[in-house]
Length: 408
Image 1 (cartoon, rainbow, N blue to C red):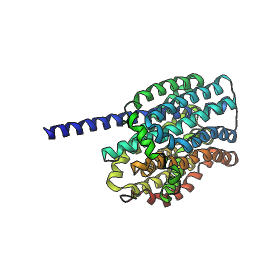
Image 2: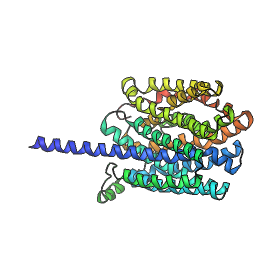
Image 3: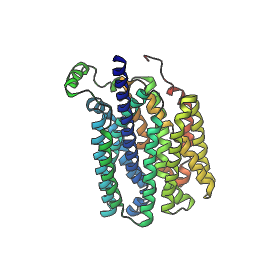
Image 4: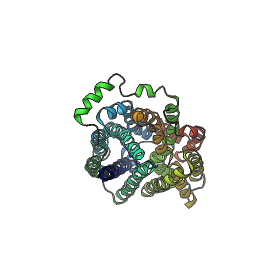
């Protein structure tokens, strides 16, 4: 009888974890849809606002600044309220940011209004990023196998959908304000449903006791800033975020300006990149469990660097598209594995993920204006060559992603 009750409890716990896995995947996917819906319309936004590559980089900086600002508080907020509540609140801000940015571009042609919307989008997305990665790491630990890249694959699937919808909207002339408003409503509704499946947090009654015992040590964010491994993982994630973010922000514009693609074709190139990332993240879990983090990351980083070189230097033919695909495959595992490395110990995961995410998101803060300024001087396409240079630093940092010894 006791064995039967124990097995029932185990089965119940497994069902709960599998339900949480589904909820986390939904949240990742919808967050990707929201962000990519903006990325896919960047060429349209540039033309509607009639701005240069350099000024576009400064506008994109508003979104990055919002995200980095969110990272300074996200760890403590997730520690206090739990991932589910933070995900829902942050996604409400994402939805509002999308709607405001769409109005700023399509209805009012206002750079300040657009920047405010993008700042809200960035702050909400940054907060959601920390919370959903903390929840994803908790699910991964309970399943006892590598699944984090698959959650990021769900994010990439969302970005594929966002890229394709953006290309369709551009091709058919759907106003950007209408497009982004519809996406905002869908993303918020779906995220609320997904967050309800998250793993349970301590009951309200127990939360008070937990807060009383933990009040002295706080969320642990300040302590995490003094941990060498956490900081090095953050630097690794920074380079990989720059590698991924540069494609998100600029690959469509670069192929329009440098290879003569149409705006719709430029959006489709972005879709190709995120499609390749999705494949890499789905297949990468098998490789990571078989060969480990270090050799797999070293191989994929090399592939990403080669892909950028091909995309830039091969000319406007199909070989350049092969380069974009290789870039996406190679960039696919760095960010999610970095987040897994930050969350290897559950009790310190919110603090460490917050620190690593904040360091990593500075790539989104400095990346857009850096590539924009290089684009003004050398052309947007040639500016992408900064990526393989920085990937050399990522190769040197790969060893820090090894799992720490128990108790480390």
